[in-house]
Image 1: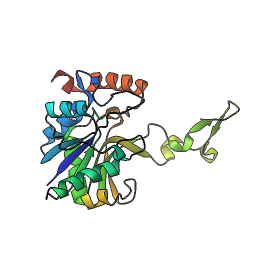
Image 2 (image 1 turned 30 degrees about the vertical axis):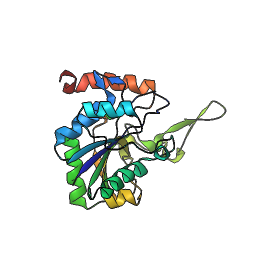
Image 3 (image 1 turned 120 degrees about the vertical axis):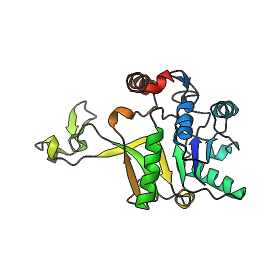
Image 4 (image 1 turned 90 degrees about the horizontal axis):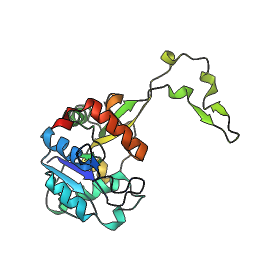
Amino acid sequence: MRIAVIPARGGSKRIPRKNIRDFCGKPMIAWSIEAALKSECFDHVIVSTDDAEITEIAKKYGANAPFLRPSRLSDDHTGTSPVVAHAVEWYRNQGVMPDPVCCIYATAPFVTPEDLLRGLDILTETCADFAFSVTSFPFPIQRAIRLTQMGRMEMFQPEYFESRSQDLEAAFHDAGQFYWGRATAWCSERPIFSSNSAPVILPRYRVQDIDTEEDWRRAEVMFDCISPRRLS
């Protein structure tokens, strides 16, 4: 049985209530729920939350919320893996063995059903522990610069000052949308960012981390420009 787990605690700090705040006409979490349902690759789409209001909104948009997440897994320091592992163990306690399991972030309005299906295919074909969304950095990380304590600039890697951008190795970062994984990998909390993971590469124009108000405004602009779902 394949399940999608959407973590959505109620106590977000930098953007209060961001998981259910209106984003382009719907609660933010609704976009993730709808993408998961439209992919038709999950037997269950569940929301793991500690919040009654989030539970009601999740159900309204078609997800299940079969339990309230315990407080020990709902603070600012809890990572993704323990939350997904908790959901897997809950199913096992009901006599069900879910595998594989996909974690979809609640603040991922650019996630698509097609990308979720592609991630499942990659996980299956590569026999990896995880397959997760990534995108490329728009500028060579080898030529990154930083601000010093004296208010000046310096390169992180000055040895690449003379290197041409096209001669430098491309670098990628977590796109923060979804993470397919084997149930055993989630429950043993194996590292996601490792050689046992496979990439699901997304274009940069469909990736935006949403942690600040500036991120939120940028995501709205991007969404209006590229997403036909705004009209649905």
